[in-house]
Length: 305
Image 1: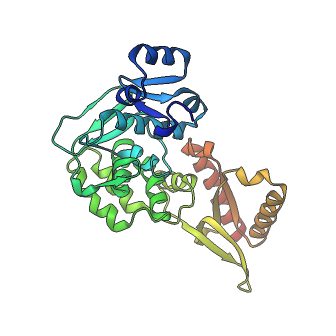
Image 2: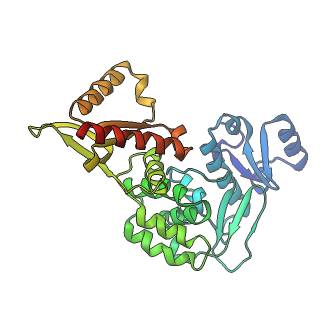
């Protein structure tokens, strides 16, 4: 067992004292890399921290900060820190731990933590990792602070995995009050879709909207002239016979899967569909997406003409 193994690899000063580790020993452990000090009185286990993926570091950071506030403190995880604790997808957020007050205390922020204004007790739940706001509220907090695209990635995941409902999203909106991000949160609640099967698909929907395009059908089935199933596609502009697929590339590690995907796409083209593949990099530059879609619409129109 490692020094902080029983504490989930995070600790506050009080935890180290209880383990018999004094101030001088703590300093020595930080210098040697056994511990990493995140902020005053807040530590994580060095080897675990250095080996962790960015999203796991965020979860550890939030857990360590919450622990440093002490048991019974009037704070709860919020925003993407509440979502990370539940393993829900996040995108376009910062690395700071986000908490909210559960009393009337002041909000504040530093380089490691942001403590937001009070959230009604009815929207705070007790979890194995400590108090946290409800998933629906956390999703809308992300949207309000970081934008609709970030909000949709988490909202779609929450609906898809049954962690939140549309009614809960609507019910959480008033908690944001007159905040500057309430319009972004409302837009996220309106657009959220359980049909998005990945963060890439959520982002694709938002990029298409920002380009002024109507939302296509999601997870649409395509059949041949005899009604036999051919494929289920991420997005379909049915009237324009254009398929849009988000290409995460991971499936192509398997040569058999790559061949199967090629045969599937060939069949779609035989049936008169144009297929547009969008990558994570494409979504970072909407102009690329626009060029690909414009060309596909033109090819489809020429073929039908």
